[in-house]
Image 1 (tube, rainbow, N blue to C red):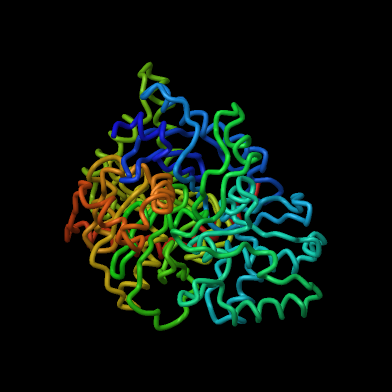
Image 2 (cartoon, rainbow, N blue to C red):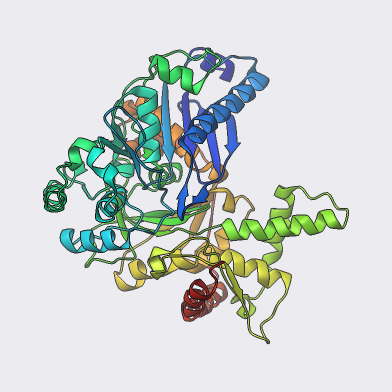
Length: 531
């Protein structure tokens, strides 16, 4: 069937993901083929020390993204989008959106990027004997109580961004299990919040004078393939103010960007993993068994079906790298050269391959915010070198690409070297892998494991949530989510594996030693640079 006919008959799935700097929409058929795309650029703001987005900007960005996707479909196929087989919403995990019983926002939206929850995260980790990272929703809620914020007594709902937008579109307070795993610990057998830990959390809140119950305010947990509600008339009008979109469309559970990354890379089976490279960078490894001990550097989360995963999550990924490339664009313009950003990224990335395996002694830290893996609660972007470092463009770019994996590698070293986790392959996805053979090579060196990048790598999580919507609409007849992905989506997709080069592995290990040794410099910069 031709794409136009599929679209007109609603035999398609729409996925929209709220990334850190871009809201992206992808329309697919039930076999995962991309039919149309749309996007909208946006940016978080640091307001009174809090990384946030205005919720009005969330609505506006959703509409702009959908409008752009609708335009793409109209230009390609001459169709007006009216209905879909299913819709899925995903977003950056974690954070804190609190509403009262009348759905009024009670406090500024705190994103995953905030690290102002150290006291809460430490106390909850000790209480539950389970690592509660700084950015988890439970840590944000409890920190607000510890800080004496009056609004906590009026909280009726706590959402992640994906769950919040799903609620606005459907009226259902639900969340995908992968996203829920970034709010509170999950019991993978029960496919729900861990009940024993829930009781301990509720008792702790009561001890602090708050009668709030976690299950009453956190969204209900759903797994991949479960119906998470239907697009309401109000939701359709929010998504498409033109009035063309019809209500009543099924929606899959809203997921976080970790779950959509796993889906987009078919990394949902034990001994497989994926790395999502963007404003934040995180690696996921599906485990054969539980870890030997608690590690504060490692998040325990789940696949969209509820299987346990270990995650090495770095708050800082490509922000500083993008800033440097922007500086090179300014130089090109100064010299009268018109430089397309895609071309500029490609040339700079490719040139980095000429650099030394250890980056010639150059050491950047792209710390725009705190970094939980290195236990640093604020950030100062830095570039450090010695007088005899090999300071050239290739090493400069290679060092900035290496450092986007720097903190993540420290977490992966815990899993692979200390815990002995077995990893047969890792999949790379996200825009950082768009330039062939560059980040794929560096990632292979960092984990000393073959890395595969699919042709769909640059579509990222928006494609992943579209696949989860397609699974709800048509994929369950193939069995479990992993069966659907194997049989229908990835069976014929081309992907090239790259094995690690021993010289690169050795060079990355040297860079990592420099990275660890230089952390006191980053800490000193935080203390000294405060203007």
